[in-house]
Image (cartoon, rainbow over all chains, first blue to last red; front, side, top):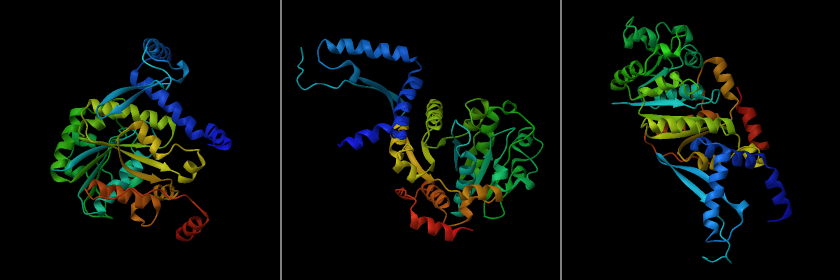
Length: 85
Length: 263
């Protein structure tokens, strides 16, 4: 990926829209405030951090529709160097 | 026994009525028997988009109040065989009708017709619940923008709670040129977010405005991108396997072609 594509990806309004939507819909579907979401994310991260190494700000959570129900998707990017403690 | 399908969106102005008019007409052109119902009591528009406003005598309210028979309230579209409109009352309000009454009308119509399409009002209040009450299936209309997709998501949740299945999606007013430029949410992103089956994509087509002006649904004029998209959608609804084509961008050549095919 060259510098130009990184730069243009950042500025494309469609990508901003998609990211905003994912966040809005996760909150709508959960029916919780952004604060509660952040708190949940923080506490989950705290538990996992006892066992794995990862950077807090790389964690993301969303609620995905699967048929008639929702699945909580949480991404905790795992660092290759980290081992189960 | 026919199918009762509600066409809905949550947000207003995304093309529910235009889609109902075109899909209804397209199904009739394919030889199906069809009734389209305007469920937007107090703000009816389907009759106008269909160009049938001068022939509406009775409405669903008159049927409910037993002022006339159901068959008598149906307005026949003379341009195609077996296409009927049941208009909404303009004088009443949305909560003057109860869900059971809509359900009863749908039950009676689906015995006689292959497809009963219900044009839902915008919103998630009583009018929407009435429109969905008699439906077994739903078509969600959305445009590729943040607010329409957000509202569509809300509506999908509500319909799933009512055991309406299947729920499929029409992505309306997609502009391949804007998607390519990165200024419009792409088909794949919409599907990834909403995660329901895609029934079809209708490209942005300025012919829609002229067709509404005339009161002649787009599908009566072959060849426009919107008309072809609605015909493909109708074919899929009759069980034919019609692939969803990748949308082509506008370019110099297609612009010239469009210019020549303009009426």
